[in-house]
Image 1 (spheres, one colour):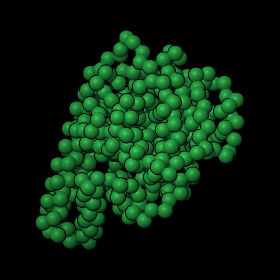
Image 2 (cartoon, rainbow, N blue to C red):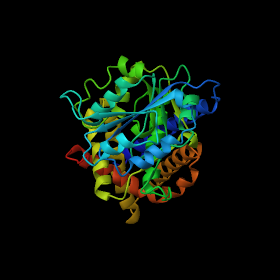
Image 3 (cartoon, one colour):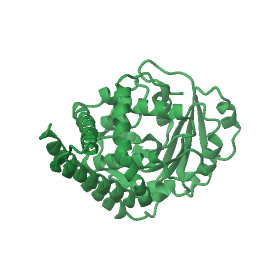
Image 4 (cartoon, rainbow, N blue to C red):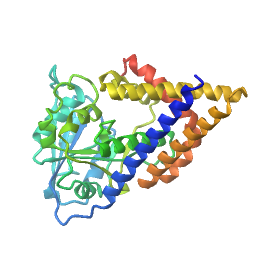
Length: 367
């Protein structure tokens, strides 16, 4: 125990610095891209299940997109909705270039959201596919930024998303700081060509790569994973991945005020541990054990029994975490969220441990 914490801290800190290197380089690549003269054709694909309360906001934001209408299409898949979404979408007039697909039939091989998304992908006319969710608001410059970042050699693109409970709320939420950590992990992974994770609400990939990788074959029977599990399948076929840091591509996700729903969302995300490859399981297990040991050392510190070496390790952990998180937040122009880190020092590891355990038990509710 005496030796493990310093060694584990050195490995943990080195890993964070390695991630920061990836974040730095992929952000530099994004900044080097300039606005192209031509407008590429883009298909926007959105699956919506019982989202009647969110659809008017979503469509209003899509209607404001500053991009030639002849260069994009909107494919909205009504996924088994029973709340009146079908009738509303059939009567909407905000987005004249929207195609509505009413999806009510899954197959044993592909179920849930993946089945709806696959139907949308197969319907899409264009190779560049942009994805968001029904509870999101897209900026007017969303497609323009996708057009800039999706150069000829890029097959996969990710950008940041802010979470609010209501559209008028501020971004000062612990969840947004936590989210930025996972985006830092995802963006570094894209640079190193390692599929750590992804986020479905603001991602772009080519239809040709989806088909070449076999799409959802083999993972379609899992309820979730239309982002990270799919990326793991597609990564060997992706020539280059990109991360758009610009706030002009950031979307806003309205997740509501239902704490139970948030709880089950966290369980669902953590439940994919056994679906991940061995190396990612090993990394997750290492972080889990390190966080447990971190709390043990904090307890010793409170009792006045912590060694000088342990105290130095705690300072190293804190310093590298703060550096990575604030640096990434600065790159995506959200630096002020770094002020939340002092609380997250203790909160984030606890949440990670809890949902790692709870997620392995499964049994979550998803609409």
